[in-house]
Image (cartoon, rainbow, N blue to C red; front, side, top):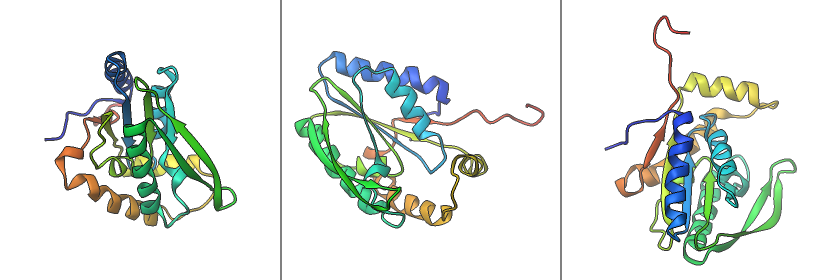
Length: 198
């Protein structure tokens, strides 16, 4: 059964409280924030991370080697999550989207009572596995297609194949959609005004 959705404004204090509860008890925490492109997951992750001192941040897209390789990037993220959960450290190879070529290596360190916010398309798919050694909080951010596409048009100064990317997003999402253990603990959805409401 899917959790009742909360608004983005309500999600930040809710998630902050959950993370703080676990880190205060000495647990390592991974917050995975997923959603279709333009849904608002990066904004949510930014607000959440800003309120968690020393929080480690990772965007799945940093690990995706090009427009047709979301699944490969999710696999790289999955490996990093296993290492962070188990050992508290991982090294990832980034992708330079400006040059469209491999970027440098990035070393990630997560203390025993530390928190990491991992956001991006495929974050829940990357976390669809046992992650012993960490408390995992899974978050799905949703928005209407029209809202997402409007955001993309205003956000991106370049043209790209949104439909092809969304098809990849939906394919990788099957990794968690088919197993209720890995579904979202928190669903974030903006308030949509009803008829006559502006």
